[in-house]
Image 1 (cartoon, one colour):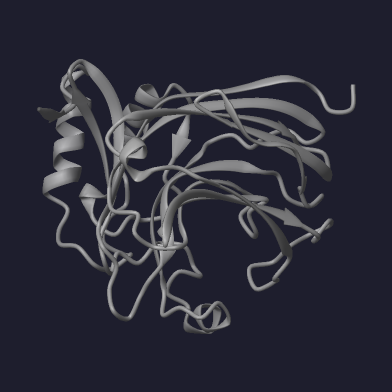
Image 2 (cartoon, rainbow, N blue to C red):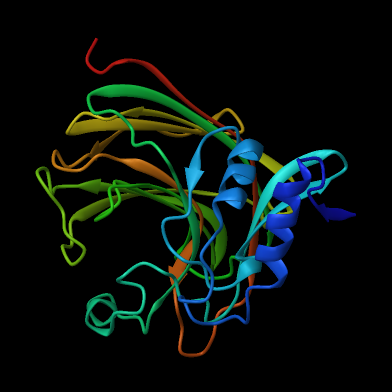
Length: 270
C-alpha cells in the first residue's frame, strides 16, 4: 500500500495535506503554487535541494509518498495538464513545434551546475503507468532556454529510451531557436521497465563543447557523447514529466523518483 509520507514533522505534514487537498480544481497552469514546506519535504526525500519554479496543473501533480518503508516522490500528469512555463500555453511557440500546448509536471534543482566541471549525477526512477507517447521526457539538463539533454521514455512502436543531445547554439539558445540534436536510443522490453526501480547514472562534462556518458542499471547507454552547453547559460536538472499536448488526448503517466545524488568530481579537461 502507498501512503502520503507521515514520518516528518507535523507542521510539514499539515502544510502538505493542505496543499494537496485544499487548493482547488485541476486544469489551468495557474491553479497551484507549490508551498515552500512541500519543496523542503521533497528535497529531503530526494537528498538534494529542489524548487518548483513553475506552477503545477493540480495539487496531486507532485506528491511525497511512502511504500514499504521506501520514501519517494511521485509525479502524475493527465491529459490537459498544461505546464506553468511561459511557453507551455503560448500559441505562437506551440505552432512552431506543431502542438496545441505543452503538458508539464516538473521540478528543478535549486543550484545550477558549475561550468567547466565534471559531475556524477545518479537517481532511481520507477515508471508506474502511461508513457505511451513519443516525446514524454522524464529527465532534462536544462538552461532555462534550450535543454542540452532531453531524456525520453517512449512506447512509440517499441519500448525504448531516447536521449537527445544538443549540438550548436554555443553562445546562447533561445526558446524558439532550433538547434541540432543527436539522438541515441536503446530498446528495452516494456515488461522489464514498468513497476520496478531503475538506476540512472550520468557523467557530465559541462564545458561549452562538453560530453556525457549515461548508464542504465550500470550498463552503458551512451559513452562520451558530445553535447553543447551554451556559454551564457548555467545548466541545471529537471525531474518529472514534460510532453506535447494532443488534440486527441494523452493518457495519464505516473513516475516515481528517489535517491538523487549530484557530485562535482573534478575540473573538466584535467
